[in-house]
Image 1 (cartoon, rainbow, N blue to C red):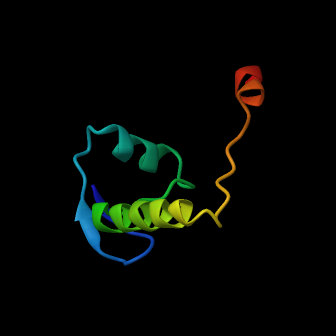
Image 2: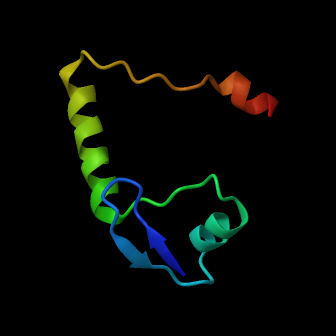
Image 3: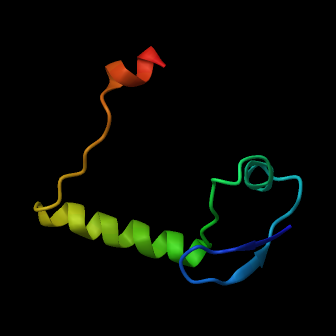
Length: 67
């Protein structure tokens, strides 16, 4: 399956039997991000959290348990 990264527009090949390929086929709202972009965003988010000025909000456990 050919997929395109939503950030850098590179085209990659995914194996059709993988979970990510199935999600992209069945739910078009899901998007694909290449490994390079994913790693870059992860690293920059960690840098912003380390500054202390970035508030990383996560949902409460109680709300997640209700679903």
